Amino acid sequence: MFVTAACLAILAQPLARAWPGQKTDKEEKLMAKIQRESNPGKKARLQLRLAKLMLTQADAAYHSRDFAGGRALLRQYLEQVKSSWATLEGTDNAIRKHLRAYKELEISLREDDRFLEDMRHRVPYPESESIREIAKGSSAVHAQVLEALFPDGFTPKGNSKRPLPPRSSLAVKAGVAG
Image (cartoon, rainbow, N blue to C red; front, side, top):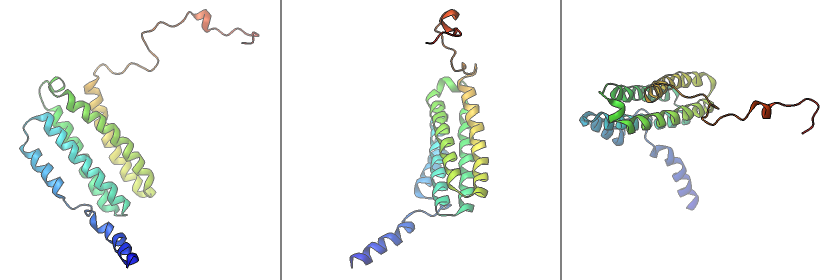
């Protein structure tokens, strides 16, 4: 009796998950909220949540070996990321008004880049190329967000405001063991 119940629980587990490509209640609710939202910062965050949901569903599809469904979900993910960026980019004084949304988008894209790289290593080679293309698109949006956040660019690593020690202390004298 116990063995039968355990077997049924194991076999029913994949059925309990939503099939990749099907719209879930959560996805539909997010899409409805996005349609109603007028604040660009909040709208971009909702679009980002929807993109994360698509990425999670794509990972589940690849895990269940549904490569076509996974590719479709990854394309939807990238579309949502681009629309989230377009929503923020299209507003006046966007960075000052919606700095938190910009930061959340940057952090999320950085996490997604790592996630996509990990996902790419978990799938067969031909499928990893399609993930690489989506990752390139996501990285391009990430670079645009970083450019908007830091228009002057980054200071190179190692360039700190502390003065360097005198050159004589940096020089290595030949023949002297230290």
